[in-house]
Picture 1 (tube, helix red, strand yellow):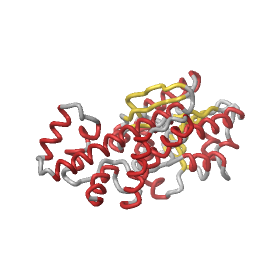
Picture 2: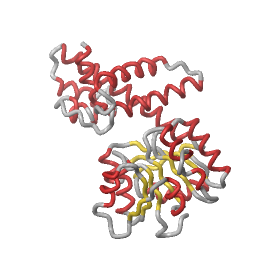
Picture 3: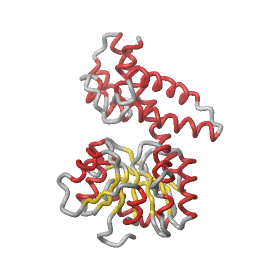
Picture 4: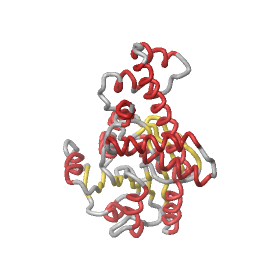
Length: 298
């Protein structure tokens, strides 16, 4: 375990990364952070205790000062750039350092980078999160973690400062696989719920009562419980997860389908519809806007 008071490295201060980094600060951690956005850096520094946050110009600069380094980046392409690009982490890693990839990356790419880190005597594990910006802000995320016992022992205290439910999933790469498959199941449930709402609307059914029926019956899922009355029926569409990120997770699930040889026909249909929604509404639209897209398509 890193010595008490040693700074935690944090790379990636986006929609989820910023509140996660703030959660670490609230728990008394000191951070050495890196992000290309000046606004994101300023937002993290604002309100922080004097000396609690410092910034490095490059990922390598983070590795110079931190023994445990958290990555919260959009996808495997960006992770690879941060690890292997100019000023990247990989060349600066020392024996005993730990990198925790908390984004949603391709499992095979995670395993490749873990092998490169291991060749330098360091470790890289995957610990993707489940939960909204609200849960990231509160420090109550669900976190899946793949990696061996030694890496887990070092990562756990840091992860507990950002999450409430921690689940070990197996070897490195397994957490990223389970996260993608989980998000496919969520996307399928949300899509089915949105389609059912559009059909109920066409029949002039009371949609509020229909939502109650779903939640009291076998159609209940996280979308019916937390999205229908809260976001879809009032037309708020502010669930906190972007359409583009949903599509990315479905593409990761598609890569798993191809790698395993499992045809997954429902997944292919889901990928196609979410892809059409992104093309129509843009990647930054909220994932609950799949309901609005279905309304436009009829």
